[in-house]
Amino acid sequence: MFDTFPQLETQNLILRQIKSSDIEAVFAFFSDADVLRYHDAEPFANLERARRLVSTWHDRFLTRQGIRWGIARKEENTIIGTCGFRFWGKPPFCAELGYELSKSDWRKGIMTEALSSVIRFGFENMELNRIEATVMVDNQASINLLSKLGFTEEGILREFGYWKYEFHDLKLFSLLKRECLQK
Image 1 (cartoon, rainbow, N blue to C red):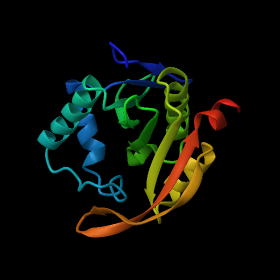
Image 2: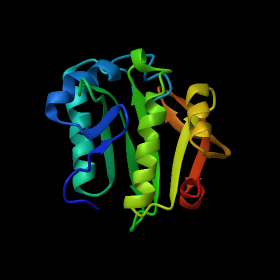
Image 3: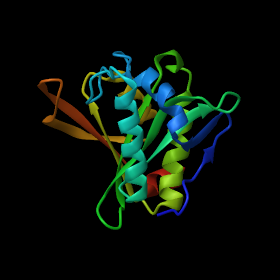
Image 4: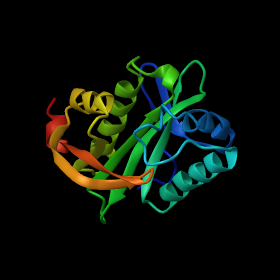
């Protein structure tokens, strides 16, 4: 994939590798129950959990199983969220998109700006042909975001997810390279 972690810039954001110095920032939004309401994890209780997650993201990049960018405003360079891909297959023509953002930054267009850059990078530089996202059926904010980004809703995966001691129906969304790059 890449020998070094690719940094991306948008008009307002830097999308960069998450470092050990970012662990407290990652903990801040991963310990927020509202941020994790539709996530497959419980809110983090300590910094060690955030440290392990950052280590997992680093290992996935090194083993070419995924890539996760930290989202930071250019003027601050403090991580306020993350986004990225987990890869399927070899070569990984298909990837799953994931993301989260600190609650104080919701509904400001930040995730739309970040994901637009990441999606374009995936299609143009990573040889992806298909990007998928699964969303809990009542997560209207994510459903709206994916629709705004041009994703197509393919259907409902009944009781596909299991976390927080219950099964969850998930909506499956996809975006194809030919759909994205023709815009």
